[in-house]
Image (tube, rainbow, N blue to C red; front, side, top):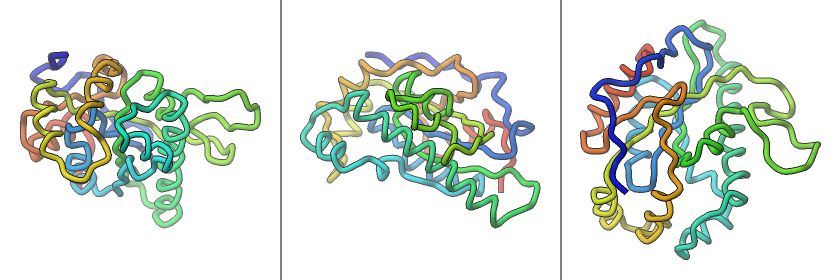
Length: 218
């Protein structure tokens, strides 16, 4: 599956400089794109906390991926919910410590392959049939105005295969890349998405992301 073409400039209409004071930035893409590297650098540039999304997987998910078994939607849904609620929790901690007017935010990595997954992260949908479950975008049933934005790292399958082949000790197996590429629904054109190319270095990716989001820097 070839890389989806991107524009030379960040998408227009992605401007969170005047949006809600509290923002959740998801660095997304298939495995091997360097989400952790970019997420860490972007969080440092913006003066926001960083959370590694893979660390929020339940053990059952890690065990499946370590065995080369792709996750199902049923596997991912609780993980996505945990990511959203983790973002809200971190923002609440920041809010309690800081009453200033500067923008508060958190950066978390997540593959976020489907539009459905991204809408869970946006706090727009719930899963499961239990009426006792609070909708996404709430912590303990308390409404949140946390706005969600995505930075998508887009690259070719060939480069991704090369990068994954060089990784040591990660639970994701190279054989699972094909499944992720088939699952991926391009976020290009969705509201609040900035695309950065895999081929450029991290500093350039950060520059494109910050410019595209139009966020003040530290």
